[in-house]
Image 1 (spheres, rainbow, N blue to C red):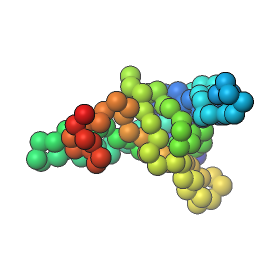
Image 2 (image 1 turned 180 degrees about the vertical axis):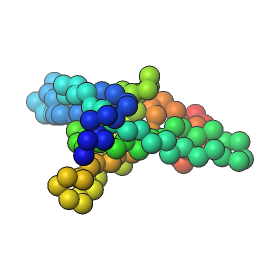
Image 3 (image 1 turned 90 degrees about the vertical axis):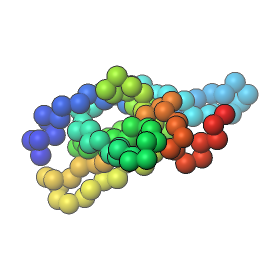
Length: 117
């Protein structure tokens, strides 16, 4: 669809690849960065109880080269993928992908599993 060629947010994706761990095995590392134009839909609710929440976004694009271990740079912050990309397979002309991101380094008391340490 022509709308994806006018996506307003530029995201730099660092796809996860296996790299040498120095012990004869492999470990996840960052691959060659890929620049993608996306629509970034905010998903963060305002909590009426005053708890701060990390920012979350849903990315929408024709193609997203992200996976569960990928890092994304956009909107002046670094982001982690929390929901891997899903292809919305309608028709060939309207096919698109979505993925959910959470801001890195933003663990707060409102986040499940936060222990305050």
